[in-house]
Image 1 (cartoon, rainbow, N blue to C red):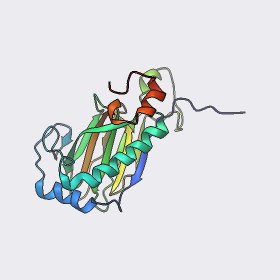
Image 2 (cartoon, rainbow, N blue to C red; image 1 turned 180 degrees about the vertical axis):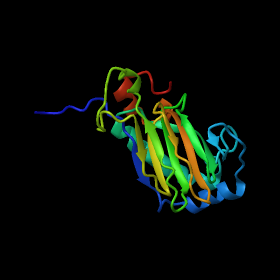
Image 3 (cartoon, one colour; image 1 turned 90 degrees about the horizontal axis):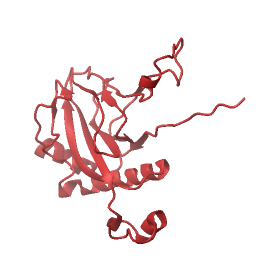
Image 4 (cartoon, one colour; image 1 turned 135 degrees about the vertical axis):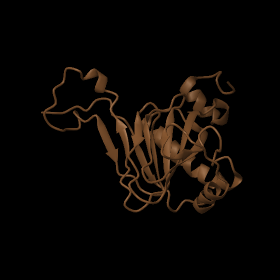
Length: 210
């Protein structure tokens, strides 16, 4: 007997604790950052639509680390290379969490945990896109095929990459200290920023400069 698992969804975790520029990147957030109230960051604050923590010279080494992770992710997933289109950060104090949502107009999204207080069990969770199609199923036990929500045990200084269509959110921060995360979205890499031989191999001639 053989089981065939169909249509897997790739989510990857990267430990960036030793990445060059990590301390400088955190300094940009804590010393230059600007936030405001945002609907998704319940009981917290966000720089979404305003302050971009990756848009600073001091953040360039960390941006490069994120891009290397993205290259690894798109290679494994078989996707066209991507480039970061914008980033923001959230501050979630005690009682803070993010509503379930997905990232429109993006290919791959990332969540990087800048600070994660000890004892914070506000896990990142994802929701199965298959749930609407299982209206006739009657699950009597929990299996990978009957699970609609899945919690990820997050870690400080770790980056999590996932397809932007994957609905997700975060559980409530149950500590007295702030949880700080940086999130980003991506666009397909413009062909003129890639090796022409790669573009020709994928698309054929005529797309090198399009």
